[in-house]
Image (cartoon, rainbow, N blue to C red):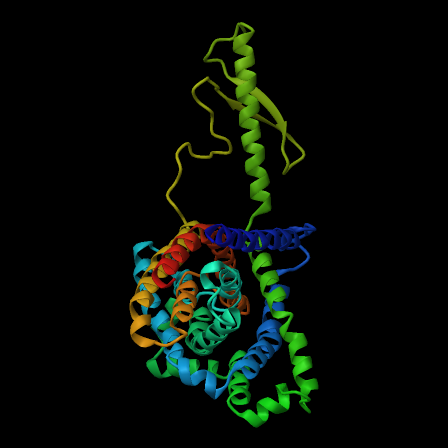
Length: 433
């Protein structure tokens, strides 16, 4: 079973990396003749795509998902799941705040750090993992395993969505400095304003339709007279995953300085060339003394002049290129922010919420659903940051750097996800199966 889990995590990570490679190319090529905003998709265009996604496509997804799957009979047995989303954030947010200070996260990234560490992927990745687990021998006794597990995740998403698009989006669209001068009343007004964002309206519509049987039959029932409405909404909803991954990958591409990468590669190639020339001269018994400088001439890539680079090369020392220091400097943003977010989300917060859930779930739930429900909740605990966080951040045109830092961190989260998922799923299966 563990091999299947490893394969699932590796497949998901491989898909993310492949999509990111496409996004990096689209974000940097073709090179712009003027300015530094290269690629097929400029930063203003990326912000526009993100705005369209959250305004049109995402509300269609939330409305159709909730309207189709929600019912009173479903909520009657597992309604405490609505509170578990609150518990996740209640545990994750204070830990993220402590880590924010401990890792000395840059001030401008602090709000995005808190949101990204507190809101994990609740739908797509848990469903992929549960689909694999439900096919294994240990869960063969669970009737309609995957359908029940997906229902649990959709109920979790109700409260999580309400919290994210109210408080979470407010934090993403503001910075710590601006919030210090705002009154409590002003903060509350902004949060209430976010409650009327299009994704929230989609959630309200989905709740209304799902909890009103006549409306649910009219939109989703057999021979529903308003089926054409849901068909149109489903068409838009199917585009959400693709658009989210595109926004993530292009944001990552924008965070990578291709010119700087090329410059560093050329610098290291030059070092190797200088060292090889020095050793070749020593092997041929060159008459020049060891202290005599070796002069290499290279045409500059930035000007039409020849630049002489002079350095003394010995067998135990490689000279610095372009005034690059010999010793590694201390971490600086956004590298420190990326590492801090990956460690906080994937290890610290995941471990804390996993432990708390494993302790509480047996005291809150009972009955035939207990084992599968516990496994689903524990799997949700260890997921990477939700893609929605990056999409929402990308709609804020003055938070471009934060969006690119979040995208870079999420890629590393998926790389670490392969190993953390194995460890946590092994513990979860040993506890409940």
